[in-house]
Length: 320
Image (cartoon, one colour):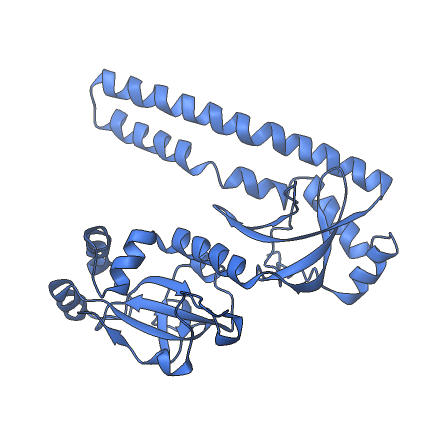
């Protein structure tokens, strides 16, 4: 079994070599693996095969169930269109990126530029003013609230190392972080506004119904049923961090103040540790519904309309 080695792009030895215009052996090996398609670039392809694969599985079930021919042909036509589009949007850019990366390895020329991490549908990406760089697929010790000087291969944009040069604008960080959290936890601004008022929205209620059959030690059916009948939302504020939990609980969680909230692996990667947050959740089952990053008092200017963070805010705020 292959052991996945965690990549530290802020490693001092790697940074020092890149500042001299050189690659370390580890960086060269990492880029070579990506150029062969086993890591890095291949991740983009794997993220896009779910929809056409699901359509083909549905087609098999329809054929086995002797579905009407028109239904089978329509589904097949849709699967072919979607599959072709996914192929054209993924495979040619993948091949081009690999070719560029191979040329980079021959030339071994480096460039550097300032940028930061932004969240996209697939995760955080290193973004310059006019370009998106290619990060390795392994977990990274980079934070979206920091500014970096990225050292990368110029043709492919493959990132070799990242040097911290300061913090990004606080308001911009909170805005980007809220967008990322809303994407992975499936809420929007209107939903967040309702949760702030202590209200559970209809869409949230419908999404909670399947939780009756996916309970894994975090709550009981009676607790969830009571929460749905009451329709109330509570808030808990405090410093947030990520935590891996022991069984029988879900393995990934956010800790906000003194409370734990189980989350998906995708959501686990988004939260920035040691920042203040306000989490909106069901009172008895403790299911997390939405969450927003808060401004620390020293980050607020006079007249700022945002809620200032206060450590006493970790007391739950019940809805009306």
